[in-house]
Image 1 (spheres, rainbow, N blue to C red):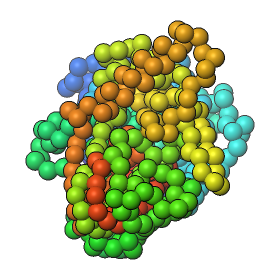
Image 2 (spheres, rainbow, N blue to C red):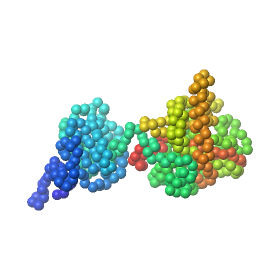
Image 3 (cartoon, rainbow, N blue to C red):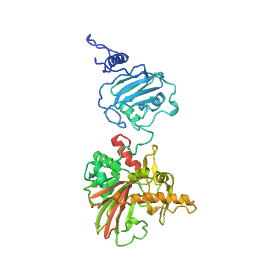
Image 4 (spheres, rainbow, N blue to C red):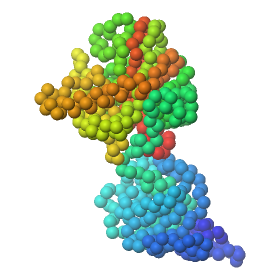
Length: 454
């Protein structure tokens, strides 16, 4: 038989004399000998069993749904000479070492088949077990241990684990943009990110397309939607759990740009005034993840929507003004929202960085910025004003903005942790509805459909 054909040792030997029954160890030795004859020698860092090139990729459709379904990428494997770990080389030539303890503790075979939670406590993992041998077939790496335990590691799972850095790669698939010309030149399309409206129940294709573009560009337009509040709410509920705030879980209201806000309303959004670019919920510990925004009708003039990629602005400041960038990432500012029932306060820096110093969130609304402490030293006060002025100037620079007039059949989704929104002043009557979706649910919804980190 082919040296790559796995043998079922539990079955009775075939009675025909034209075939041979080989043990897995014999197959590995044969393949190793053949590869040594026709290929350059393998690294000497590996000990028994010797590494060998693996057969072509096969479909990974048999893997559990929480694994990546990308093509199989393993090229070789081997056990280090200690032997304290398993080294795996992938198609791109990169090698990752998995320690014995890590493999035993995180063996995917120990996860619950339905909940995908761990089934064994942390202290049950042996720390002194060594690898006796390792073999490969059916897109899986099988590890035999000195205590006679066997671990089966799907190839895609190994690749997925090797790609992790310790924290979600928020910025690994983002397209940062300065303005509309810059965005369209990077997306190879003359149009802004858009997905045709799909009536409920939302299809997986629609959810994946919408959230993927939202994640990549920071916003997406849903085109061809019926101009109804029910449409907006159903869309939000289909993309994730609605996030409740002081405004409730869903809002549908009318504003007359020629008049002031209605009684009991204490927010500039309920007026016809110009609103500079900002993020919502700066005064909340967990700011809204997605804003769903729908202009149902407008009988008047003005009211264009401004969009700013705050990640682009922040990265620009990182390069051009490191001192200001450092201040914006380290010094907390006070943000507030005050009304009759609530006095909301939160202390957070404007820019939040992740484990690898990547930008995770920009939190800024100049209208909700509380006064800095008057007791600050002159040097501290100067640093504060320089930092706020720097980012404020970039945000309000029209060359860093996209300006669009939203028609009634278009729903705007923005990543509120990244893309700021604003509005030019308007006259006349506008009906607006919308809602928030939590960051966790938005990312979880997308991750469950792409089988990758967001």
